[in-house]
Length: 233
Length: 359
Image: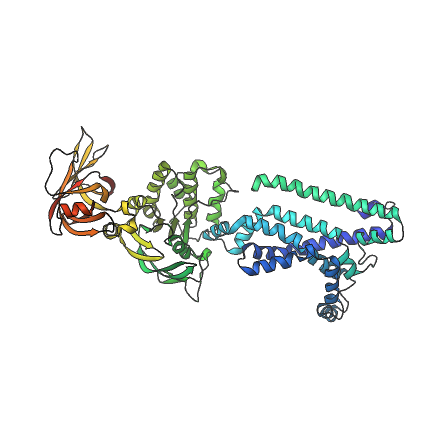
């Protein structure tokens, strides 16, 4: 896709677009794997720990990205607990690498994946799962045969919202990943750099592209939402 | 015959559940008590939805106790919920298939065709489960539960949401399940009307306790009217069908010493054993037979006990030809007629309801 506009985007910007799309796709895949069990637990949890866990998941919504980015940099840096473990495991550092970006982006987009899934699972409800259990469905069986089909809208919303959110990340990624072309430079950072050097034309091109992608994605979410609402209710 | 042993202990806020006992489940057993007595909690514990609240043993196999827990999907139960809980996003056939695919393989005892025929849901199969009427929902729910080929059916007030007609249809269906599918049914209800029509055994609950259990007839005689619901208290009496008065459509029920006239459309074969229900509030007491009274049913009886309540009322327990009935009167009447245990009196029965034929 990036190759489709050789003149529209410079080679560095094409690389940034490619990095951004890769990051978003990998993040979405990981997010669905991680957010599903978290959302499931939260949907069926009771008691005060539920509120604590919900608050923790929602933190990225309100924290300045620089705060998250700062803590992540400390954790992922070669001296940090996770970063040093990664160094002994792979020989390279997590901070200022694509892998580090993925971790940061997954954590930062977590609420965008967890919340739609949690809503969907709450709509499925304990009663339906009990009913499935009374029909000899094991918990895994009930999850795949009842909860997943009924939560399809939640899964689509979670995937699309976290994809879109990853596209738009800036602060956290800059703190954790820096600005290495082809490795950690994403579109939002590339735009910032173009503006800094007063290359407004390049900034315009990238900004317009991101605007269109974001709008199309959100339009897709709202269209699927209204279509599914009538079917699943 | 299935043996069920319970020892359940838990509290939800102010509500204490202390339900214990051993029960032989055969045919339909009613789990009866007023709303909030803990019936549904007991049923849910048997189904496996209440881990950690005590012991459930079925045919001497532990389903749960303090250390072990068999999860609900490995318990051989079929559950019918009050609201049916069909999967509304599937068709009726889809709901049945969901259960059938997960059935424990069990030969031919219960087949898809038997279930569909017995519940009369053939015409509904292709419909979406979300479009059915209340009565249809419960038929499909019963069929779906049967498709897992369970060893025990649990029903949690399955008729509560239905209108009178649908309720009557379904009662007949439920009554036929134990024989058709060789399965005991535990039927939760707070409606004595339903229970007396289908159940052969009764487990009575009140305030979280199982207060008594036994055969239905015996339980209805002995249960405290406070439990059965004051105005529901009464007795089941067994008699033999006698002659039929075609002109007035009345069936005679012979009780040995007395005779009851039962309004009936069609004649019953002479000699059929018939169970009828006499409500305490429909029974009055006279010292001698009375002429010139619209009440036709006057049967000789002996007072065996007088239960005075606080307030105005008293219940007189009567024995007639070895069977017990209750008369609800005021304490003032008891005093004015000088009623005493041992006295021979006449029970005036204002109305008799047909209950069921016995074999």
